[in-house]
Amino acid sequence: MTRYNSNYGSHDQLQDLRRANMVALREVDQLKLEVQRLTDELYLAHEALKREFVRNEIKEITE
Image (tube, rainbow, N blue to C red):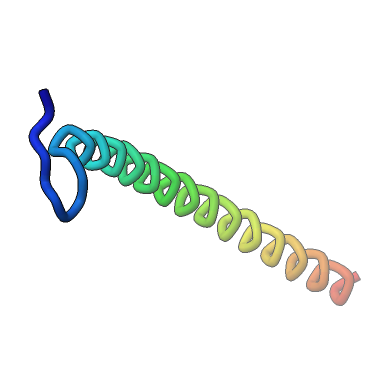
């Protein structure tokens, strides 16, 4: 039998919601890490493209 909290519903329902919330928060944390990793990767690729562009510009000037 479930205990009842008159303000929010049964104790079991609250426990289920807390568990679901913890799972959701872990998933959000994982997504944040993945977004940060991809952002770093994109930044490095952008920097490499800029270096290549400058190299090509210098090469054209010196030819």
